[in-house]
Image: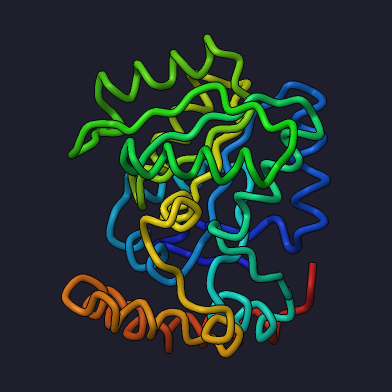
Length: 253
C-alpha cells in the first residue's frame, strides 16, 4: 500500500506486527539502526503540504499503518496491512529491546512525562535498560543545534532504540537526520505514546478504540485544536479512497 505526492511515493512497507518484530530483532542483533514512522491521515495531509516532511518520510526505513482509514484503504487496494498505532508499539518494542540487551532512550514531551513513562516502562518490562531521557526545549527545531546535541549523545551512549515523542513532523525529521548522524540507533516516532504511558494524557477507552471512534473521542476532548485537524483529514479521504480503489483494480506486482 502506498500514497503518492506529485509523483513521490510513501509506502507502508511493514504489513503486520510479526514482520515488524522480526525486522527490529534482526536490526538489534546486527547493530543496525532504523527509523520507524506510523502513517495516518493527518500525516498524509502534512505530507502533501510540506516537502521537508515528505523528504523525511521517504528516509524512514519502516512505515506502518496508524489509523483505521489506512487499514481500510489497504484492503480496498488489495494490499492489506495491520493496524499498528505508535502508542501501541512502545511496550512491544521495549520488550524486544530488553530481550536483545539494547539500551533505550526517551526523547520529547516534558521532563515530568518522561520520568513517569520511564517508571511505567521499567515496571512493565523486566530487564529494560533506559539509558537516557531528554525533554528538549520548546519550540524544538529538529534541524538546530539542540537536535545535533541529542543525536551526538545518543550515538555516544550506545543507545539502540530511541522513542521520539515530539509530534509530526518534528519527530520524523529528527529520525531522518539521526539515520545519518547516529546510524546505530533505531528511532521510533510515537507521538503521544509516552504521555499516555505516564498518565499525562488520557487515551480513549478500549471500547471506543474497538469501534474505530478514537478520533471522535480525541476531537471532543480538545475541539479547538483537533476539530480543524480532523476536518482536513476528512476532506482528503475521498481522493485517497479513489486512489486505493485504483490500486485494487491493478494486478498485484
